[in-house]
Amino acid sequence: MVVFTFTVLVFLVLRFTVTLFNFLSNPKLSAFRPAFSASVSFVIMLRNEESNLLNLLDSIKSQDFSNFEVFICYNDMEQHDEETVTQFCGQDARFLMVKGKLNDYSWIESRATGNYLMLLDSNTHIHSGLLNSLIYRIRIFKLGIISVIPTQVIESFRQQLLVPLNDFMLLNMVPLRAVRLFKAPVFSVSNHDCLILDAEKCYANQWLERIDTRKGASELLRMVKQDQEKAEVLLGNKFVYKRAKHNDVEALSTAAENLRLYFNGNLLVAFLYVFLVVFGPLIILMGFDINVLVLPIGLIFLSRVMTAFLTSQNPVYTVLTHPLQMVMLVVIYIKALSKQLLTSGKQK
Picture (tube, rainbow, N blue to C red):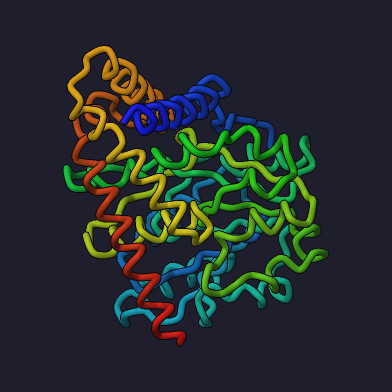
Protein backbone atom coordinates (compact mmCIF):
# COMPACT_ATOMS: atom_id res chain seq x y z
CA MET A 1 0.00 0.00 0.00
CA VAL A 2 2.89 2.33 0.80
CA VAL A 3 4.47 1.74 -2.62
CA PHE A 4 1.14 2.29 -4.38
CA THR A 5 0.49 5.50 -2.43
CA PHE A 6 3.97 6.77 -3.27
CA THR A 7 3.44 5.93 -6.98
CA VAL A 8 0.13 7.81 -7.11
CA LEU A 9 1.58 10.83 -5.33
CA VAL A 10 4.56 10.98 -7.70
CA PHE A 11 2.17 10.74 -10.66
CA LEU A 12 0.01 13.55 -9.26
CA VAL A 13 3.08 15.73 -8.70
CA LEU A 14 4.27 15.16 -12.28
CA ARG A 15 0.82 16.04 -13.67
CA PHE A 16 0.68 19.11 -11.46
CA THR A 17 4.15 20.17 -12.64
CA VAL A 18 3.09 20.01 -16.31
CA THR A 19 -0.11 21.93 -15.56
CA LEU A 20 1.83 24.55 -13.58
CA PHE A 21 4.31 24.92 -16.47
CA ASN A 22 1.42 25.50 -18.87
CA PHE A 23 -0.21 27.96 -16.50
CA LEU A 24 2.96 30.01 -15.98
CA SER A 25 4.05 29.90 -19.63
CA ASN A 26 0.49 30.86 -20.72
CA PRO A 27 0.47 29.17 -24.17
CA LYS A 28 -2.34 31.29 -25.62
CA LEU A 29 -2.49 32.79 -29.09
CA SER A 30 -1.65 36.47 -28.76
CA ALA A 31 -3.09 39.20 -30.95
CA PHE A 32 -1.15 40.79 -33.80
CA ARG A 33 -3.23 43.40 -35.59
CA PRO A 34 -1.18 44.71 -38.58
CA ALA A 35 -2.49 43.11 -41.81
CA PHE A 36 -0.46 40.87 -44.09
CA SER A 37 -0.69 40.67 -47.88
CA ALA A 38 -0.62 36.83 -47.88
CA SER A 39 -3.53 34.66 -49.03
CA VAL A 40 -5.21 31.84 -47.10
CA SER A 41 -7.06 28.75 -48.35
CA PHE A 42 -9.61 27.39 -45.87
CA VAL A 43 -10.56 23.71 -46.00
CA ILE A 44 -13.63 22.60 -44.03
CA MET A 45 -14.37 18.87 -43.83
CA LEU A 46 -18.13 18.61 -43.33
CA ARG A 47 -18.99 15.35 -41.61
CA ASN A 48 -22.49 13.90 -41.56
CA GLU A 49 -23.23 15.17 -38.07
CA GLU A 50 -24.65 18.28 -36.42
CA SER A 51 -22.49 21.27 -37.25
CA ASN A 52 -22.22 24.99 -36.93
CA LEU A 53 -21.28 25.43 -40.59
CA LEU A 54 -23.25 28.56 -41.51
CA ASN A 55 -22.04 30.38 -38.41
CA LEU A 56 -18.49 29.34 -39.27
CA LEU A 57 -18.83 30.61 -42.84
CA ASP A 58 -20.24 33.92 -41.57
CA SER A 59 -17.32 34.25 -39.14
CA ILE A 60 -14.82 33.68 -41.96
CA LYS A 61 -16.58 36.22 -44.16
CA SER A 62 -16.46 38.87 -41.41
CA GLN A 63 -12.71 38.52 -40.84
CA ASP A 64 -10.49 41.59 -41.11
CA PHE A 65 -8.69 39.66 -43.85
CA SER A 66 -10.17 39.54 -47.35
CA ASN A 67 -7.62 37.58 -49.40
CA PHE A 68 -8.94 34.05 -48.85
CA GLU A 69 -10.82 31.18 -50.46
CA VAL A 70 -12.93 28.54 -48.73
CA PHE A 71 -13.38 24.91 -49.81
CA ILE A 72 -16.29 23.07 -48.15
CA CYS A 73 -15.61 19.38 -48.63
CA TYR A 74 -18.49 16.98 -48.04
CA ASN A 75 -19.36 13.39 -48.78
CA ASP A 76 -23.06 13.46 -48.00
CA MET A 77 -25.44 16.21 -46.99
CA GLU A 78 -29.17 16.46 -46.50
CA GLN A 79 -30.89 18.16 -49.44
CA HIS A 80 -32.10 21.14 -47.42
CA ASP A 81 -28.62 21.74 -45.96
CA GLU A 82 -26.99 21.38 -49.36
CA GLU A 83 -29.37 23.94 -50.86
CA THR A 84 -28.67 26.37 -48.00
CA VAL A 85 -24.89 26.05 -48.33
CA THR A 86 -25.09 26.27 -52.13
CA GLN A 87 -27.08 29.50 -51.82
CA PHE A 88 -24.48 30.93 -49.43
CA CYS A 89 -21.62 30.02 -51.80
CA GLY A 90 -23.51 31.54 -54.73
CA GLN A 91 -23.40 34.93 -53.01
CA ASP A 92 -19.60 34.94 -52.69
CA ALA A 93 -17.26 33.40 -55.29
CA ARG A 94 -14.60 32.82 -52.63
CA PHE A 95 -16.71 29.99 -51.13
CA LEU A 96 -16.68 26.70 -53.07
CA MET A 97 -18.25 23.27 -52.46
CA VAL A 98 -16.18 20.14 -53.15
CA LYS A 99 -17.76 16.69 -53.05
CA GLY A 100 -15.37 13.90 -52.12
CA LYS A 101 -14.17 11.51 -49.45
CA LEU A 102 -13.70 12.76 -45.91
CA ASN A 103 -10.10 13.02 -44.72
CA ASP A 104 -8.89 12.94 -48.34
CA TYR A 105 -6.74 16.05 -48.75
CA SER A 106 -4.88 14.96 -51.90
CA TRP A 107 -6.87 17.36 -54.13
CA ILE A 108 -5.91 20.50 -52.22
CA GLU A 109 -2.54 21.17 -53.86
CA SER A 110 -4.08 21.25 -57.34
CA ARG A 111 -6.91 23.63 -56.37
CA ALA A 112 -5.81 25.79 -53.44
CA THR A 113 -3.92 28.97 -54.30
CA GLY A 114 -3.24 30.37 -50.82
CA ASN A 115 0.16 30.90 -49.23
CA TYR A 116 -1.28 29.23 -46.14
CA LEU A 117 -3.71 26.36 -45.65
CA MET A 118 -6.19 26.46 -42.79
CA LEU A 119 -8.10 23.32 -41.83
CA LEU A 120 -11.18 23.90 -39.69
CA ASP A 121 -13.75 21.67 -38.02
CA SER A 122 -17.30 22.57 -39.08
CA ASN A 123 -18.32 23.11 -35.42
CA THR A 124 -15.76 25.87 -34.85
CA HIS A 125 -16.26 29.64 -34.95
CA ILE A 126 -13.42 32.11 -35.51
CA HIS A 127 -13.08 35.73 -34.44
CA SER A 128 -11.49 38.72 -36.14
CA GLY A 129 -7.71 38.95 -35.85
CA LEU A 130 -7.09 35.20 -35.96
CA LEU A 131 -5.43 35.01 -39.40
CA ASN A 132 -3.02 37.91 -38.95
CA SER A 133 -2.00 36.58 -35.52
CA LEU A 134 -1.31 33.09 -36.90
CA ILE A 135 0.56 34.28 -39.99
CA TYR A 136 2.73 36.50 -37.80
CA ARG A 137 3.75 33.52 -35.63
CA ILE A 138 4.45 31.29 -38.62
CA ARG A 139 6.72 33.92 -40.15
CA ILE A 140 8.53 35.07 -37.01
CA PHE A 141 9.23 31.53 -35.72
CA LYS A 142 9.59 29.87 -39.17
CA LEU A 143 6.91 27.29 -38.38
CA GLY A 144 5.52 24.58 -40.63
CA ILE A 145 2.23 24.26 -38.74
CA ILE A 146 0.27 25.73 -35.84
CA SER A 147 -2.49 23.83 -34.06
CA VAL A 148 -4.96 25.98 -32.14
CA ILE A 149 -7.02 24.35 -29.38
CA PRO A 150 -10.46 26.03 -29.50
CA THR A 151 -12.16 27.43 -26.43
CA GLN A 152 -15.06 25.10 -25.71
CA VAL A 153 -18.60 26.50 -25.57
CA ILE A 154 -20.50 24.62 -22.83
CA GLU A 155 -24.27 25.02 -22.81
CA SER A 156 -25.58 22.26 -20.53
CA PHE A 157 -24.75 20.29 -17.40
CA ARG A 158 -24.17 17.12 -19.45
CA GLN A 159 -21.61 18.95 -21.58
CA GLN A 160 -19.93 20.22 -18.40
CA LEU A 161 -19.30 16.62 -17.36
CA LEU A 162 -17.74 15.62 -20.68
CA VAL A 163 -16.29 18.51 -22.68
CA PRO A 164 -13.66 19.86 -20.20
CA LEU A 165 -11.97 16.45 -20.04
CA ASN A 166 -10.19 17.00 -23.37
CA ASP A 167 -8.46 20.14 -22.08
CA PHE A 168 -7.90 18.48 -18.69
CA MET A 169 -5.93 15.60 -20.25
CA LEU A 170 -4.08 17.85 -22.68
CA LEU A 171 -2.85 20.40 -20.16
CA ASN A 172 -1.65 17.88 -17.56
CA MET A 173 0.16 15.68 -20.09
CA VAL A 174 1.77 18.02 -22.63
CA PRO A 175 3.84 21.15 -21.87
CA LEU A 176 2.54 23.13 -24.86
CA ARG A 177 5.43 25.58 -25.10
CA ALA A 178 7.81 22.62 -25.42
CA VAL A 179 6.15 21.63 -28.71
CA ARG A 180 7.81 24.57 -30.47
CA LEU A 181 11.05 24.48 -28.47
CA PHE A 182 11.82 20.81 -29.18
CA LYS A 183 11.59 19.14 -32.59
CA ALA A 184 11.20 15.64 -31.12
CA PRO A 185 7.81 14.12 -32.18
CA VAL A 186 7.22 13.06 -28.57
CA PHE A 187 6.41 16.73 -27.87
CA SER A 188 3.27 16.83 -29.99
CA VAL A 189 -0.45 16.44 -29.58
CA SER A 190 -3.11 15.35 -32.04
CA ASN A 191 -5.83 17.80 -33.00
CA HIS A 192 -7.82 18.58 -36.13
CA ASP A 193 -10.14 21.40 -35.03
CA CYS A 194 -8.00 24.31 -36.19
CA LEU A 195 -4.71 23.92 -38.09
CA ILE A 196 -2.78 26.35 -40.26
CA LEU A 197 0.13 25.24 -42.45
CA ASP A 198 2.77 26.95 -44.53
CA ALA A 199 1.58 25.82 -47.99
CA GLU A 200 5.06 25.82 -49.56
CA LYS A 201 6.50 23.53 -46.88
CA CYS A 202 3.35 21.41 -46.94
CA TYR A 203 3.53 20.71 -50.68
CA ALA A 204 7.32 20.24 -50.65
CA ASN A 205 7.09 17.55 -47.94
CA GLN A 206 3.84 16.05 -49.32
CA TRP A 207 2.15 16.18 -45.92
CA LEU A 208 -1.35 16.09 -47.37
CA GLU A 209 -0.62 13.06 -49.55
CA ARG A 210 0.88 11.16 -46.60
CA ILE A 211 -2.11 11.57 -44.27
CA ASP A 212 -3.59 8.32 -42.97
CA THR A 213 -7.25 8.71 -43.98
CA ARG A 214 -8.33 6.76 -40.89
CA LYS A 215 -6.80 9.42 -38.63
CA GLY A 216 -7.22 12.47 -40.83
CA ALA A 217 -5.61 15.83 -40.14
CA SER A 218 -5.04 15.01 -36.47
CA GLU A 219 -1.74 13.34 -37.41
CA LEU A 220 -0.40 16.34 -39.32
CA LEU A 221 1.49 17.95 -36.45
CA ARG A 222 3.29 14.73 -35.57
CA MET A 223 4.17 14.25 -39.26
CA VAL A 224 5.57 17.78 -39.49
CA LYS A 225 7.82 17.20 -36.49
CA GLN A 226 9.03 13.89 -37.88
CA ASP A 227 10.25 15.87 -40.91
CA GLN A 228 12.23 18.10 -38.52
CA GLU A 229 10.07 21.15 -39.21
CA LYS A 230 8.94 23.44 -36.41
CA ALA A 231 5.41 23.19 -35.02
CA GLU A 232 3.43 24.93 -32.31
CA VAL A 233 0.30 24.22 -30.26
CA LEU A 234 -1.58 27.13 -28.72
CA LEU A 235 -4.82 27.71 -26.84
CA GLY A 236 -7.48 29.62 -28.76
CA ASN A 237 -7.64 32.58 -26.34
CA LYS A 238 -11.07 33.77 -27.61
CA PHE A 239 -9.92 33.68 -31.25
CA VAL A 240 -11.39 30.21 -31.91
CA TYR A 241 -14.43 28.64 -30.28
CA LYS A 242 -15.93 25.20 -30.67
CA ARG A 243 -19.54 24.36 -29.92
CA ALA A 244 -19.99 21.01 -28.20
CA LYS A 245 -22.26 18.42 -29.81
CA HIS A 246 -25.76 18.16 -28.35
CA ASN A 247 -26.03 14.54 -29.46
CA ASP A 248 -24.69 12.58 -26.46
CA VAL A 249 -23.69 9.54 -28.52
CA GLU A 250 -21.64 11.63 -30.97
CA ALA A 251 -20.11 13.67 -28.14
CA LEU A 252 -19.02 10.50 -26.33
CA SER A 253 -17.59 9.01 -29.53
CA THR A 254 -15.61 12.21 -30.18
CA ALA A 255 -14.23 12.21 -26.63
CA ALA A 256 -13.23 8.54 -26.97
CA GLU A 257 -11.46 9.27 -30.27
CA ASN A 258 -9.59 12.19 -28.68
CA LEU A 259 -8.47 9.95 -25.82
CA ARG A 260 -7.17 7.38 -28.31
CA LEU A 261 -5.31 10.05 -30.30
CA TYR A 262 -3.75 11.61 -27.19
CA PHE A 263 -2.12 8.26 -26.44
CA ASN A 264 -1.33 7.52 -30.10
CA GLY A 265 -3.66 4.51 -30.08
CA ASN A 266 -1.89 2.83 -27.12
CA LEU A 267 -4.83 2.04 -24.86
CA LEU A 268 -2.65 0.15 -22.39
CA VAL A 269 -0.85 3.39 -21.52
CA ALA A 270 -4.24 5.12 -21.54
CA PHE A 271 -5.50 2.53 -19.03
CA LEU A 272 -2.58 3.24 -16.68
CA TYR A 273 -3.29 6.95 -16.97
CA VAL A 274 -7.03 6.56 -16.25
CA PHE A 275 -6.35 4.14 -13.40
CA LEU A 276 -3.89 6.48 -11.67
CA VAL A 277 -6.02 9.58 -12.28
CA VAL A 278 -9.38 8.12 -11.21
CA PHE A 279 -8.77 5.13 -8.96
CA GLY A 280 -5.42 6.12 -7.44
CA PRO A 281 -6.80 8.97 -5.29
CA LEU A 282 -9.87 6.86 -4.40
CA ILE A 283 -7.73 4.03 -3.06
CA ILE A 284 -5.64 6.50 -1.04
CA LEU A 285 -8.88 8.03 0.24
CA MET A 286 -9.88 4.65 1.64
CA GLY A 287 -6.88 4.81 3.98
CA PHE A 288 -8.43 7.81 5.76
CA ASP A 289 -5.01 9.22 6.66
CA ILE A 290 -5.55 12.98 6.70
CA ASN A 291 -1.80 13.63 6.51
CA VAL A 292 -1.63 11.71 3.23
CA LEU A 293 -4.90 13.08 1.80
CA VAL A 294 -3.93 16.77 2.01
CA LEU A 295 -1.34 16.51 -0.78
CA PRO A 296 -3.41 14.72 -3.48
CA ILE A 297 -6.53 16.80 -2.79
CA GLY A 298 -4.50 20.01 -2.95
CA LEU A 299 -2.76 19.01 -6.19
CA ILE A 300 -6.03 18.01 -7.87
CA PHE A 301 -7.78 21.19 -6.75
CA LEU A 302 -5.00 23.50 -7.94
CA SER A 303 -4.63 21.64 -11.25
CA ARG A 304 -8.32 21.96 -12.05
CA VAL A 305 -8.37 25.67 -11.17
CA MET A 306 -5.34 26.41 -13.39
CA THR A 307 -6.81 24.40 -16.26
CA ALA A 308 -10.11 26.25 -15.96
CA PHE A 309 -8.42 29.67 -16.17
CA LEU A 310 -6.29 28.60 -19.15
CA THR A 311 -9.34 27.39 -21.09
CA SER A 312 -11.74 30.20 -20.11
CA GLN A 313 -14.00 27.87 -18.13
CA ASN A 314 -15.70 28.49 -14.78
CA PRO A 315 -13.28 27.22 -12.08
CA VAL A 316 -16.08 26.72 -9.52
CA TYR A 317 -18.08 24.48 -11.86
CA THR A 318 -14.91 22.64 -12.85
CA VAL A 319 -13.95 21.82 -9.26
CA LEU A 320 -17.48 20.89 -8.17
CA THR A 321 -18.04 18.54 -11.11
CA HIS A 322 -14.58 16.94 -10.92
CA PRO A 323 -15.79 13.67 -9.29
CA LEU A 324 -18.48 13.21 -11.96
CA GLN A 325 -16.02 14.07 -14.70
CA MET A 326 -13.73 11.30 -13.44
CA VAL A 327 -16.63 8.86 -13.81
CA MET A 328 -17.08 10.09 -17.38
CA LEU A 329 -13.36 9.61 -18.01
CA VAL A 330 -13.77 5.91 -17.21
CA VAL A 331 -16.80 5.74 -19.53
CA ILE A 332 -14.79 7.42 -22.30
CA TYR A 333 -11.97 4.90 -21.89
CA ILE A 334 -14.40 1.97 -22.06
CA LYS A 335 -15.92 3.50 -25.21
CA ALA A 336 -12.48 3.92 -26.81
CA LEU A 337 -11.48 0.37 -25.89
CA SER A 338 -14.68 -1.18 -27.25
CA LYS A 339 -14.35 0.80 -30.49
CA GLN A 340 -10.74 -0.28 -30.98
CA LEU A 341 -11.57 -3.93 -30.29
CA LEU A 342 -14.51 -3.76 -32.68
CA THR A 343 -12.39 -2.13 -35.39
CA SER A 344 -9.56 -4.65 -35.04
CA GLY A 345 -12.10 -7.48 -35.13
CA LYS A 346 -13.51 -6.21 -38.41
CA GLN A 347 -10.03 -5.89 -39.91
CA LYS A 348 -9.29 -9.51 -39.05
